[in-house]
Image 1: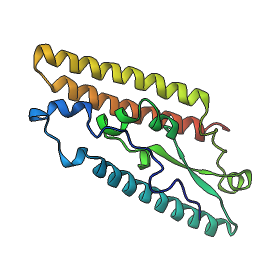
Image 2 (image 1 turned 120 degrees about the vertical axis):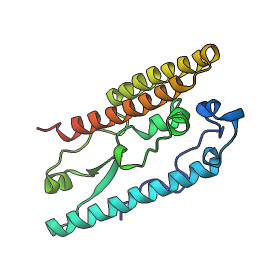
Image 3 (image 1 turned 180 degrees about the vertical axis):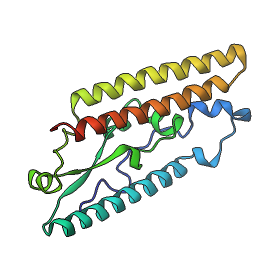
Image 4 (image 1 turned 45 degrees about the horizontal axis):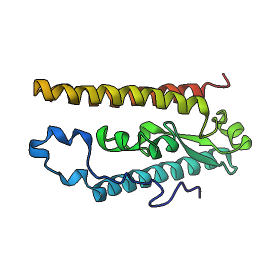
Length: 187
């Protein structure tokens, strides 16, 4: 069976606080913001991804009567989640790298790609993909920080939440655009 990562392969940020906690009364810490809660969320999502992968491998192998090797390609690469934007993605945007929106189950070799009639994906750390992700996340973080700064003047946290939700939508849209470019690369 193909496995991906291990229980704690995603290094968690050193702080358990999120920037959007400022919107809660008196900066109260909710249980959902703790490292333990984040670890549970990542573990559950990773387990779901591994289950989806195992079902897909089983179905494709049965359909083709030959072993099919597949792996989960993270559309927003793990390298992005582990770097300077990780805390923003995990805490502020409350996204998860292993959820279905960010995982493309891909052929692991040329034989499997031929069987499932899907092109091989680019390398996990494709420089073009990394640059697109970094540019989008840098801009989203800047807009979020600007919205936080404006709350000092306006005392209106609605713009902070709007910036957070816009950032989530942009990350999802980028993942879908990357998925489409990977799937249609040979077309």
